[in-house]
Image (cartoon, rainbow, N blue to C red; front, top):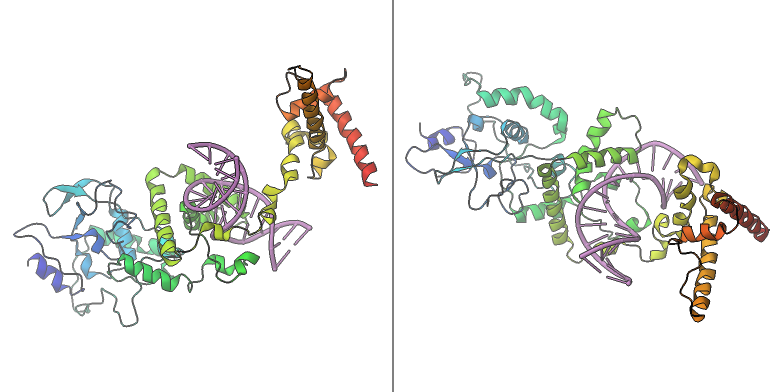
Length: 398
DNA sequence: GGGCCTTTGAAGCAC
DNA sequence: GTGCTTCAAAGGCCC
């Protein structure tokens, strides 16, 4: 039986491929395998080898996978079996080519706004339910791949919640199809973020979120893993993200590259869907009302005592820093700086180029120099200054 | 109800 | 070109 007959005998509807004659090992382009991304410039996992995918398409020997139910799980099993890229496969040109690993991050099929696989319609039949599958038939012995697949199938299911996952048809989604799919699904598939409360700006109609960057996709992909590893012990999201940030930094360049490419697809599809959208559309209209943590100057100034004495010496902090208010030192600084500038002006007018304190290079030093003009130590001076100003502040309040 | 926390990356803006 | 700011995700916590 030649290769064509072998393929058609299984009747799986796989794309017909003309193989070079006479006796070359039958191969099938990797991108035609079910669930595998199209071999285009938007396929993020294709060009890891650095080779031009359009010039040197990778080919895999045709295994007996065509008589099995063809879905992503099987593809993932193949991926797991596929070693790192290695020049060991035959191509049509007879030259060695690269077999790339084809990872399928969960973000692709699950929470990505832009699903890039195709879901079979109601009328579409999934593969593998061939008419030849009857009890009478004696099955072929399982080959290595089938054994591997059998052993790891359940694991794959558990790891990826594939019970909720449609069986994929071996269609090759074009970029246009991906766009259409995205356009249809982006507003209908309830993402996690749509389940949580949205802030006021986001509740506005026509609010368009930013596309996710690589790290965000990584977070989506791995958050559940971190939670599982920690037993869902009500870990604060901040802590989870710290861990995810650490893992991201430890991730290999190749692994990160997948997410960068995914992010690029997300961005491109987002741009196609919302050509007029700009990131600044999501910026607050009134910048003064934006993130108070960053814009509130007292927040920064309130850190002055912390920076100076450290978190372990809170006893030395002024009461304003303890209350996360504007540090009294900063109040001193504003006054001192003003008088300093006035002094500089007067000094300059007198023809002197000396500064009041040659060692005062920073506002803090300036304040401390001012405060240590007496025999008291700088610390004591500062504390004295703080208490004096505190009293003055109290009087002012009264 | 809504902001904060915490991470990285992308984008926009001011200088 | 550089630096700053904001926003994407997540969900418990706090006001």
